Amino acid sequence: MGKPLPQAAVDLLTREVYAHIVTLNRDGSPHVTLVWVEARDGAVSFNTARGRKKTRNLERDPRIVVSVQDAGNPRQYAVFSGTARLIDEGAIEQIDGLAKKYLGRDVYPAHRPDEPRVRVDVDLERITGMGPWVA
Image 1 (tube, rainbow, N blue to C red):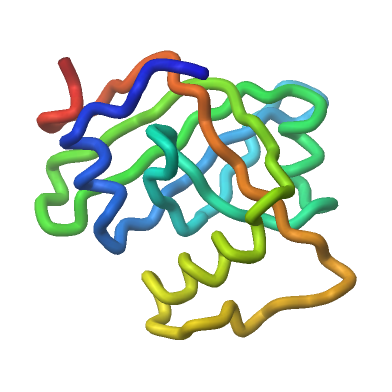
Image 2: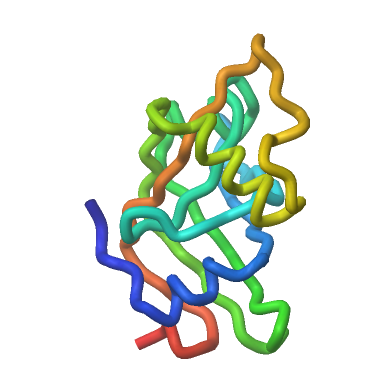
């Protein structure tokens, strides 16, 4: 486990904010994608499907950066750097919860039985950016 998230970061991630995640391709170049995000068990957490580029990258190299901008105050943003942990348990429940948060739907509408879901928690090494979450 990494550093705990400060309460201000938890508050930010509780809102309907979008995150860009950066993983590393095999050649070392960055791969950036947009994800729904939340604070879960003291960590930055998001959900994806097994077999996608970001999942394959994280299985090979778990280093990750998650960048979140505060929609209510665009000059404030948080950049979470750390190591990803891929967790299968509870992944379906998480994506359904994120669908509720972001779409107002009880069930994630793009469920595919051939595409297993995975929860990604970030063991935090540092937070940078601008806002009350930066020490």
